[in-house]
Image 1 (cartoon, protein in one colour):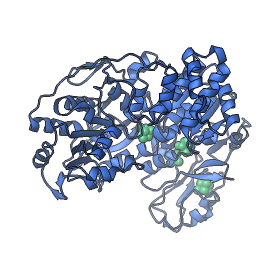
Image 2 (image 1 turned 30 degrees about the horizontal axis):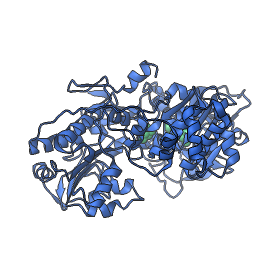
Image 3 (image 1 turned 90 degrees about the vertical axis):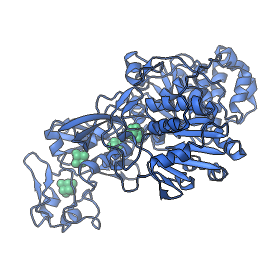
Image 4 (image 1 turned 45 degrees about the horizontal axis):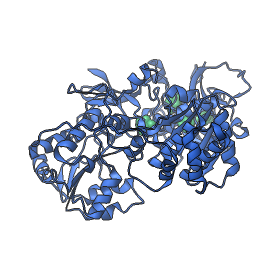
Length: 163
Length: 471
Ligand code: SF4
Ligand code: SF4
Ligand code: SF4
Ligand code: SF4
């Protein structure tokens, strides 16, 4: 299964990924930038959780866990109740105040781009190559890597400080 | 019919490639150009929003005089009163195409005095490129950057060419012993990754590093450097002695190292070049300023004036009519009283894509096209219009041609002679740290092989050519 691999040791926090995601997802950023322990900037994106809270929270079944593991949201079914936004433990679904029906985009791992043989927009744009879209086994083998959801792997969040 | 057109982002000097899907003249989508030698497909946050600038509601759409719309004919008639006087000047922003750069040079020679014409590279001023023109410092290619064991970023390259961060970071992460070091006025986006960072006055930090390198090299330092050592002995050095010493050691012992310089200060450029020259072979200089169109313009150029030089003349009243295309002078030089100077002008025409602080002062305002609306070549790479210009906007080149026609002068070709290389001696070092802002290199045309659309040829290597030549 291909996963987003975020190499935090290389990320410079430029937010280009957010701009690219914003562009392909029409104006609501689904991929933002967060800070962890004031130590590393963490490109904050939907983890496509194995057991997603947003899916459970959604009263309209607009949020769904697809067979390929991605968590996708149907604009047509969404009523804009924001339950998923509140439920998501990672806060990646955005700003409760700003979002409403139809304008809540969500990372779908650039489903349509990938289907056309393109890279996800965030991966293509990242100036430092910190975001990769790679085949990674479910059990992450490299000790430097940390599986932080069904489809997102973070690499080495604390190495940066030790050098 | 959908076709893919190639264009170059000119928002900063990197010049990243863009692919735009165009359907029946309507730009649909932006795609990343993985084959672009500059960016390998990456775009920074700015580049990603390129299409938003087309037909943006804030764009300037019509030529105006004192706020009322006048047609292009009337506007050009107004502007054409300005040229052909020794008291007139022209400043054009550096996002112009290769062909437009040629138009500016021809305009400079035909209508104005070349020293009263400048191409503004905003942060990357042409005087930096010229200050290094004849300095025999080895230049780093992108491959050199990728394999640099010790990289010193002077100022945050991210602020000038965001995508250069790609190579700097790649070098740092290639091996555990590789270091990235930063010399900058303050902490920037890259400093977080620095092994050694020297903050404070950049000139002083570079001077400190240069002194340290000369000291460590002792007798094996080049003769000019030893001569310079006395010369600069009394000058201020940075407080961070330990950091400077460590950086000098790292730089010297690295089998390959690069100084990545992004600056508008020719003195910083000379000092950085001096550090490479003292440290010896395999210590190379990468001038971010030279990427994008800056190289094409500066190296081919008829020796034009500098923006600061022209602004100084305006302030002294030696220039009374000014045409500015693209550049927002007031915003670009916040520490200088540009507004005060511009108010002294008898005539100011300003062209821009968006209203800005300079157009606010101009009596005649001209709407200009952005890169996505132009056909041409940018630094040797194709730039294809993906949409017609917003409103009645026109590319800089067309505007200059219209003025030329109106003033009825024939574009001229001018030659100049190349002066000998700068002597890197003690006096030179003293000159380095003086506050001199005028370029020390004499005006020059360097002959060269880039083919322009009109069939003329110059010597600047385009990006693809430079890469093919293994530079
Ligand atoms: S685009 Fe890449 S380098 Fe920039 S913040 Fe995002 S992950 Fe980090
Ligand atoms: S990270 Fe949040 S939005 Fe993504 S699947 Fe998990 S709960 Fe849902
Ligand atoms: S994969 Fe696509 S939708 Fe998901 S964060 Fe990246 S750009 Fe956004
Ligand atoms: S790095 Fe510069 S040229 Fe490249 S996309 Fe960003 S602004 Fe444009």
